[in-house]
Amino acid sequence: MPALSSDALFEVAAWMQRWQPDRYLVADPVRSRIVAEVAGAVVVYEAEAVHRLIPKRRS
Image (tube, rainbow, N blue to C red; front, side, top):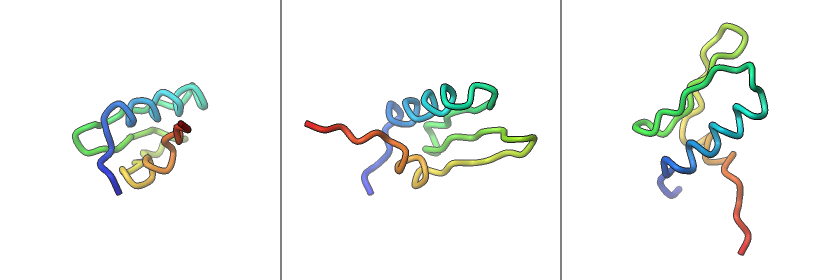
């Protein structure tokens, strides 16, 4: 799997924030993950899970 760019990570984090605006989340480009608070629990989306959420660009 190719490396996850910080641009792609922040793009997914912005999409997640628009999708559920009441969710607090932070993009961590150093570890290629997104950390979110969901219903009082901390959820960590690691690079592999975030990779699946990156929009596929068609040429």
